[in-house]
Image (tube, rainbow, N blue to C red; front, side, top):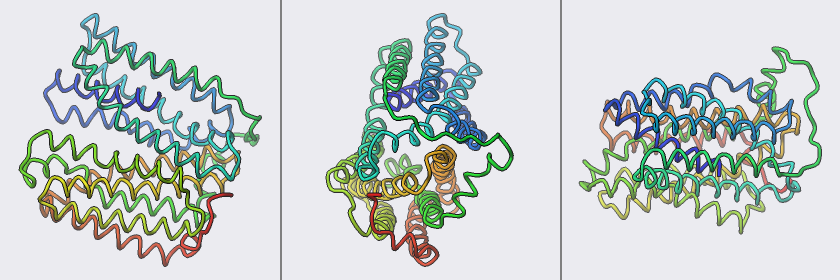
Length: 382
């Protein structure tokens, strides 16, 4: 509910700000307003998630996002919506999301036995991928009925999410008792540095997504490479999420019982190969299938990485470690789009995608040598 609501809100905010400003730069500022809080608050949100009840944190954050959506609903109704207000609301929602994401991730291992964690991670990933598909579609459809309708629906969804989180029953988790200090704020980073398997998994995903950010160039491929219309862009944008959803559902039913490290590197290499196939394709069907394979292979990395982080991190450290994990994911996505745009500007869209795909494969091969413990990881069942 929360992820779908956030996606709906993002689509509505983007459409509304563009309607007001007719500026692509303004759209970029909205993304920056949502991303900066996560970047700036990483150490703080992890500390909070380890010190306080994660259900309460999630409840408060979802309630804040619901109030933010309601504010835009009322402002739209009163005709007083401005781009400044939208930027502020986007920053507030981004700040709440920054606290919510690591708290929810750290909460998951408290709900199920360690042996079931891989299953739960796969189902959680499938839920997030479903939100990535349904949220933008629902936001766009409801916006067709008016901004009031979509913002009202978002408010209701966030309230529902908050009520659902508040009803979760868990045993009392271990809480951090040490005083707040400079050392405790950076302890999550220190912990990751002491754990080569976690450091390898996080950094592998960071550089793989950073180099393989082909999705940022989809409008170029849809119009200039495949010579198709907006319908093709819609298909291409949906294909990675559909592939990721299928991959996560498969892993939920058929988990990785052995050679998880090998599967991780295989998935990243497959991600690079799929990126190269997409870059070479001149057929919309082949391009969509390549992007679907890209999304499915990426899920392997997501499930293995998240399972390793949860299994090898003590409960009283999970908030801080998951906050850094969220930062790695957000940074790789944002910088990956920037890298793809810059490379495309220098060499062209097709060479940029091919370079990114090849770079992803090279990183995977290099990481296999740098992090032999990660490659040798067998089980994700605790």
